[in-house]
Picture 1 (cartoon, protein in one colour):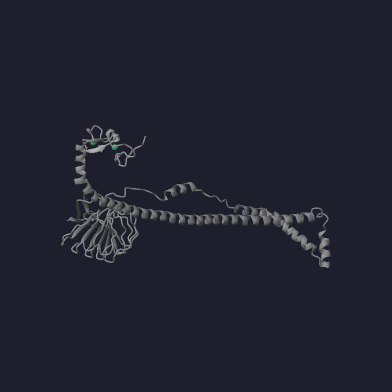
Picture 2 (cartoon, rainbow, N blue to C red):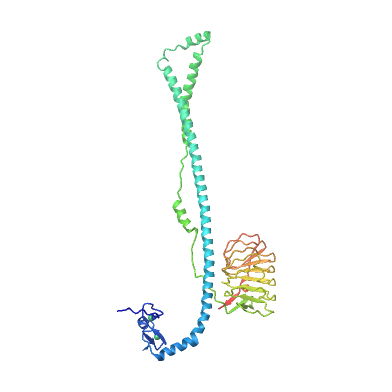
Length: 398
Ligand SMILES: [Zn+2]
Ligand SMILES: [Zn+2]
């Protein structure tokens, strides 16, 4: 018996282990047993015959095959988009890992410094106690020596000492025995007088310091876990282009890829779907530009014309680099969710106006106006409250 090896592919396109068996007359496609019991459940089926094969083939020839070419481009574009998005996520990942590494490096240095400092404080206190101890020991040792010396010398002889005789003898012989006796008298007196010696030692003992440590380690350990919060969100959100945008009561032209902005237009909102801003595509009649939430183009010099006086920046995805903001902008607005690095704010900017952005540091020294939406503490020489913010905040409709 010979096994026939089929050189043609007769397996189902969806269920690779199943043979194609029938035609689904409802869907006009070939199906396997797997198809029949799942997606095509309840449909009408037919044996594969000349008639239905011809119908299916004609559609393939006249329609599908032409559209496959387009699918190549679409697939490649999607692959590109996915890879670009992944690349930015990868960059962000590297940046995040570096930040955490740096901060922990600093922390472990700080921990070493704190450890050394705390031990130094303990050692200083210990040394003080040690000095007190030495002082007491020395004093008592001296006392005991003196007591021993005096008692040994006098305890058996004191009754036999004839002081008159010693004084008379010594005067003649230049002997100091009587002086020594008088000294021992004085020393004895010092040792016993009014508990003086005892009090002195007691005073020294009272100087010993108890040293305690309050161990806050568990609390610190708990709070240090909160050092970084890691969150994630869908990377493609809010990229829907709005239908209508107004700013300060003015209707904005919504700029998308390949849009042609009519000359004379003054207000433009740049849609998040925009992949690039061609230099010259925004006419110099434009005075007011809104970078909408999700805008993801790295702004380089010249993309935004110098005619712009009012620039509104939403929750964009790329940092503001040197020359991103044209040097002609007078009022720079940071809208809700703006959280990108800013390399430079040009000299032309006279007023920086803040909505709900988490940023607190700006490369800027002139007037800052904070709306009631701005929640941060800010240290800047000229910060003012901004009562008419609601009038300026762009209104966006989807
Ligand atoms: Zn199937
Ligand atoms: Zn079907």
